[in-house]
Length: 72
Image 1 (cartoon, helix red, strand yellow):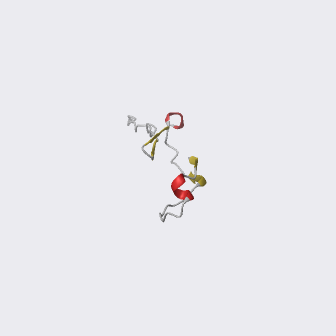
Image 2: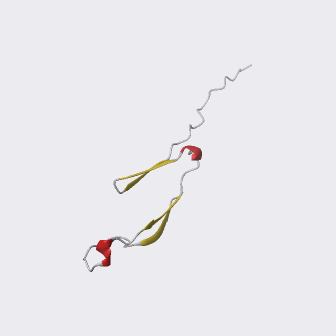
Image 3: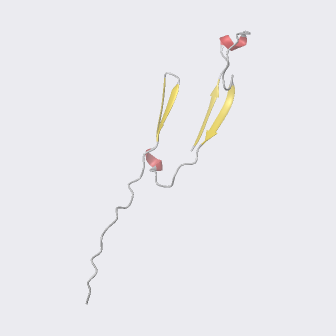
């Protein structure tokens, strides 16, 4: 999963205000390796109040089954 975005330069950053941030402005990219047992078609993303929430649903794992063995 790769998330890409761009943060625009705000008016506050134009001045010499002292504020720490991971990245002041510009393009960024983050990559994450996901397990194989996910449903890629159902991944969702929501951006609200400055927070990005990504939902990655897990696929149903094959249930173990029992096999009857007949002893002669």
